[in-house]
Image (cartoon, rainbow, N blue to C red; front, top):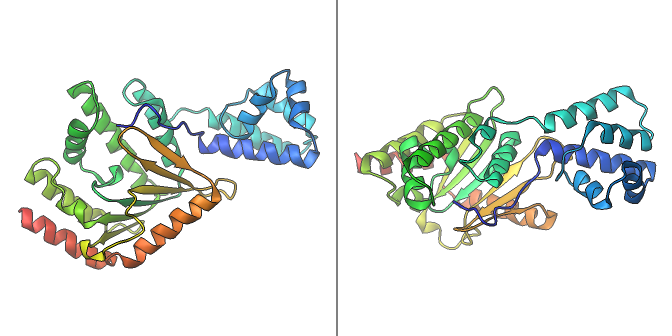
Length: 289
């Protein structure tokens, strides 16, 4: 489990609030230095607030809105409500001490996502893993402190999957390299159950599952797995997550986002169709039965 350099990310609500405050400041032609002077703080604090990297106290928020000349009471109330909701703790906060802070931040981003596009080369993504498959991955591939933490981490993974079945489910597109179907994780029974789980979840209207055959040859995903998190708000830019053994990296630069989206589109085009992919999954599961 990546720990040491897991990049901290602001919550989507904090990013939205920060973006709106930056827009108001620009519209009012107030400098960051002037805001810092009004709040009696360092200018770096204003930067962190506008980037969504730091929460803001209500008194400071109201002082900023006064400075920007915002008189619209409904808009002021909406921003105050947004600030309050940005501080609301999610279910994952009850697992403090079990999961690294940055993993909690990622779960927060994931929970606010409207769509997720995931390309995986070796493992089934966490949102689609069965408990036994997840347990095998965590036990063998993560640096844990024992069985108790393993079980708690399996709980976290299971709770994350509610994104797929909630009232307004996330739109999930997953492309799996065929090697994922062949990579034995856990027992034969565990692997068979996992493949059958993929067949089941592929039937959901909000899920698109494709398999990239080994015969596809060279493709844009050879550099490794990645996930694109997309959000409903126009002011909430997509985020790309990549992982390796010791760290996870986030990308928000527009050029990098375009590159990853292009790669995902190319992979979608060369992967087997959703129907053909289900056939491949069923065949792989049958070979294990």
